[in-house]
Image (cartoon, rainbow, N blue to C red):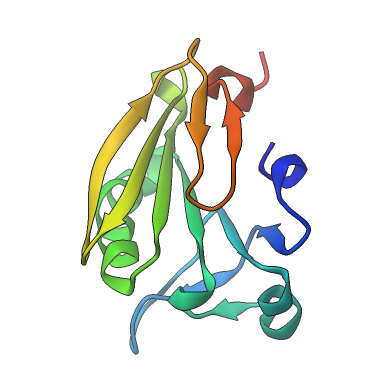
Length: 132
């Protein structure tokens, strides 16, 4: 859905590194970056390149996805962070940067249309993110 809604100047990528600090980097499940930066960088993005980082929480990454990565993304200045909790229906938790920390999260439950404008306009029901 993110790929389909993305304007031509933005790119949705997976399996890339995002440098959170001089000593740390993370691998979000998805990121939205300017297409120009995607062509130039390919693998290790700076936080300034990332408009949106998305994490899909799995049993092995719960603590990191819910706390560590969220805090690191906020500290790095990534404007929007989404955390998808599959075992909650799924529920999409959306965070928006407010200073040096995230506001929220706002929980988007299945059966309701979630509308976003932070990286670009996109709307969807979180239930549509999983195969039925």
